[in-house]
Image (cartoon, rainbow, N blue to C red; front, side, top):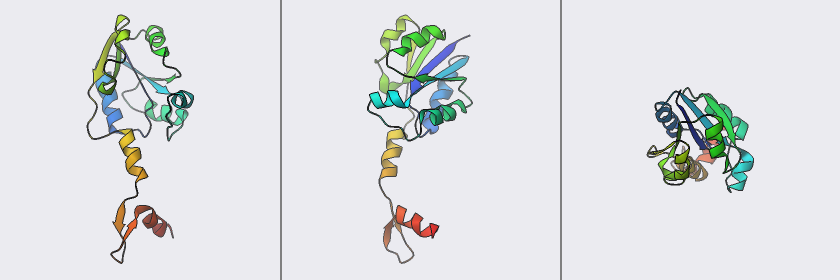
Length: 151
């Protein structure tokens, strides 16, 4: 059995994540996804919208994922490779070269990212109010429009 493992926060789960998991799963028989815990994200200076448990549940629901484990620190990758008898360690190519030292334990692959989508981009776009026309033809922020609809 060929086991693949990958790591990430996987916040605001999107089609780029699904495509990464699909391509990784195609490399073997079992895909393990290590999801960064909230505490580990804090150490990295990151904050996720969804909690670790919510993100793990979302990732686990993906048809390509066979197992979800917590990522709690930088140094666990080598231990996980041995613990789960991993054949392939895979990451997006934005990490290219960062984990080459693991190649003494298993094959290391860096897959192309899905273009035009990233969690950071989604967060940035959501943080900027969009201008929409109201019934008078004047522009208003999308948050104002939503409030008007709720009334």
